[in-house]
Amino acid sequence: MAMHLCPQRIGEGRVLCYTPVDSRHRHTGATRHVVAGVLAGQASGLAICESPGSAGFMLYGCDAQWSVLTDTWHPSLAEALAQAEHEYAGSSQTWVYYGRESAKS
Image (cartoon, rainbow, N blue to C red; front, top):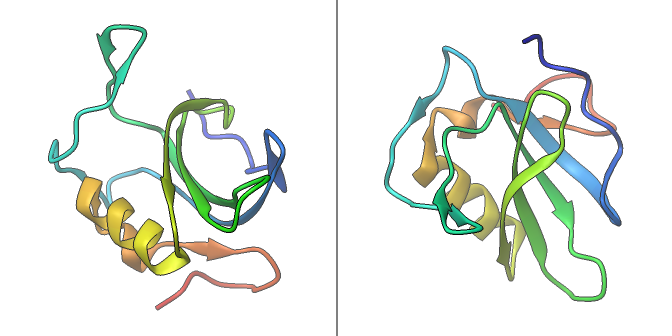
């Protein structure tokens, strides 16, 4: 299924940056997400949002429509970015930041 464009909000959080997960990435398997007792598979996209109601950041693993499959909270944007790279090698090179024309290099 083709990846949809990332919305500007996921849930109640404003999306700061996102990346589709594609051939540029390797799902490391270094983190296991269990949802409703079932091991979650690879995400189709990653998004980092401001965490509503707290000073932190949410890292979301999403499906092709940007519906949330997994989530983790991080106290800083740098820690959310590092966790994404830990889970999906190559993501540090492909983030697209809202308000910027190109991915972070």
